[in-house]
Amino acid sequence: MKAVVFTLGCKVNEVESAAIMASLEKLGFEVSDGLCPADIYVLNTCAVTREAEKKSRQLVARARKFNPEAKIFVCGCASQKSAEAFKEKGVTFVCGARDKSEVIAAVAAEFNAENCGLLFPKQTKTRAFIKIQDGCNNFCSYCVIPYLRGREKSRKIEDILGEIQNTDSPEIVLNGINISSYCDGGQTLTHLITALKSVKKRIRLGSLECNIITREFLEALNGLYDFARQFHLSLQSGSTQVLKAMNRRYTREEYLEKCTLIYEYFPDAAITTDIIAGFATESEEDFLKSLSIIDEAKFARVHAFAFSPREGTAAFKLKDIPPQVKSRRLHALLEAGERASLAYISGFIGKTLEFIAEERVDGYWTGYTGNYVKIYLPETAEAGKKYAVRLVGKFRDGALAEVIEERGV
Image (spheres, helix red, strand yellow):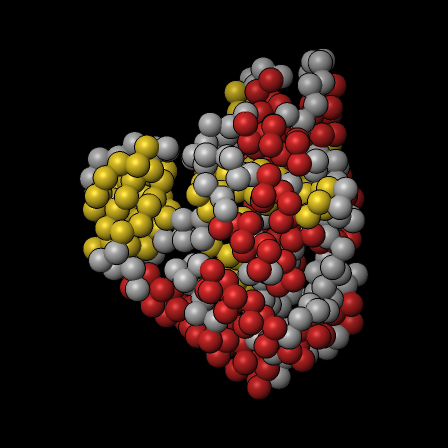
């Protein structure tokens, strides 16, 4: 029998979907992660924006177009927020974001199989995403996720090490809803990083908060066998006043100080970020501060998106600004982000970096360097292998490169 596990939303959702896929294979299903004809569909939903929630509800109809008789199981943040909206669509089973193992129990019960529980994620890429924590206690005024994912909960360091030892992927990505708050009985993310010193793989971090960037933390990263020098440091606004209204607990000046500290330890680091365009309290002056910080922080990549009021959050009560203003500001942020990305990549033309080959696309082998430059390699490569490459020019959304030598895995 065929099962499809389709995912919307964040990397944490992708990791949890990969675990569901592994469990379904254990139950005897042939599993795919793309919408196609199947006997059952597991739809892992998202509610970070109103648009994401709308797309999540539409997934049910999209799946039924492939097989009107299929069993449909729904989980994730959108169904945590509004289970009834999915039950009304006549799906087989609905649960939320907090215990996706219930999906496996429901599938096992539906097909009279033995419940195997939620297994380690199925490895579908050359990068293995390792979930180290869930939940968030920050309660940013615009964000609904803490209400859906619940309070922070971290995994044991030994459990994380055990999962890493069971993967043969050349790159490990540590992720979660708020990995900066990782805490295992008083042991912080810095302690976890120190415990990974002997791991002979590239290690990349998921999204980070400002407070985690300290000398102690950066020194621990510097002690890793192969640290991917990319810091996705969430910003959301370049205005201290807006940050205060967002309940972000740092100032513009403090954020820039953290960037300076990162560059002190890792001069070629890629600092990537998120910026919200048109938050409810954002004035034109506030917006210009968000625009200018892109150059000041020397961002390598910017993910900008328009503010989406979420019912149940503190910011939902604020007066929203006109859509056309949001659109104009978003367009300007995206353009500035593109210029920043071009400037960052251009700084490495002629230099040698290491990249791990991932897949063949349109005649090129593609993959990423440690500092997150996307490489296009016209030469022959092998998935999962590490190569030293010289960047020869800007190309598409990354750089064209040539092999200097193979570095193994």
